[in-house]
Image (cartoon, rainbow, N blue to C red; front, side):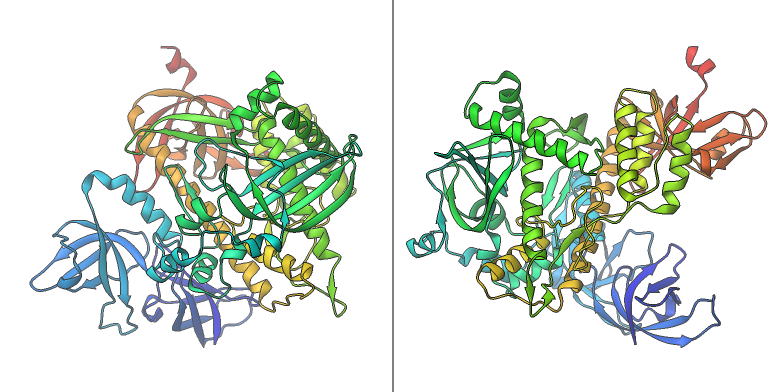
Length: 639
């Protein structure tokens, strides 16, 4: 018996990748045994092949379902009903008993939960309607379906919600006495305007010796979540909150994420803190880690803090300006030590009251964002250094480090060759030298036409950050030790970090033999959340661009493939595909991978990443979440 995740292709064939086996195992459609795409399954080998050929297997049992809720259409018959699922993957129809329809009629779209999976091919799985989705909520249903497709349930179980409501709100004097009481300090939060879950706060005070004491306070979620309880199990299964353009699918119930643990102003809150003492020069001379109780004086938005930093006046301006000075010093030192300074742009949609996109906003990282970012990075690093320096019986403590490997060599070499065409040279003598070369390039290209393409391609050479007990450091940040400690409301690994750290501080070290397994699960959940967020953004792009069918816009080529190239519109930051077939009347274009371009065999015309051109919006398919563009010749544009 082998264990792996079933991946079903559009052709209907299944493949299972098993750790320790190089090639995936082929599963024919008749051998799924009730499993669907994304399920964790146990597989038996039914046919072995010579080296280099795929083994064939059969699913013996489903170990864990990827999802148990589905959106589909009700089909009514005489005395029975079925739920039909729209998907490009093979999917059974679900039987629904008439008592479980919740008033749904023939043709209604509904959200349903499976109540009985059957491996018997003659017996259909059974589902029950949770909610009937009215036609006017088609886009809401699409967002829900994206979450379900990625394996994120839309609701918490009744048991988990009940458990969350049973948690006492009041902070007892006994609990306060077991913690460092910091309620008298100047403390505030800085978050986005629409944020409701405030994970972190900063405190600031000038000490009698002329030094500064700065507290980085994180919501003490692990204090409230009983390990192994229903709430803990469900938050671990989710692994992370998911942020879609029009909603948040939270890792924890709202009562915890937005009320109990959120560091709201003018309320006493339990926190886990990293407190540092800094000289006016910025040198850190003392560090303290432990449980605390705080009282936030004020809730700032990033925009408010940015205005204070620029105008040098306003509420807590003295404290904020000093924190800003320290943050910029840490940022400069971090980059000097090898951190790669990729710039970040966040595209967000302006939504109306129905959740429909009516505009696009581009949010850039400003100094107010960097202030919070640098102190959170510092806290994460200090915690990881503390754990890395600890041992139990001469062995490292199992701990979820956040690691980032060196750049992928296969991707790095073509990128270096491409960058050379723009006059940029790379020193490949060491990892630190590569990082320095990246920073030199990123500094040099600021404001130049090639900036966007080189930044995007540079990011693609990077390995993916992940959680693991193997502490190999974080290449992109230039840290030898790093973890995630600062967002336990929305990331489960931070809860694991809090538990391990508290056990060490309490001199009762926790040895979790399943920590690596938990790291893998939370890394997988993080990737699933990112894919869901990308799919939702793409859906909103298509929904928005349906308003501009037939119109022409300037764009930048953002990717190339053998079947065409992608263009991102300058005005909307929305990406669509120009199919190769639409270019056939002009030339025979071939992909030149080393130059990231499509090259015309007769004319020598190039469509290269980063090139500007004009396109026409010709199709917007919401079901496929796909935009189709057509290249507009400059001569035609001038007409």
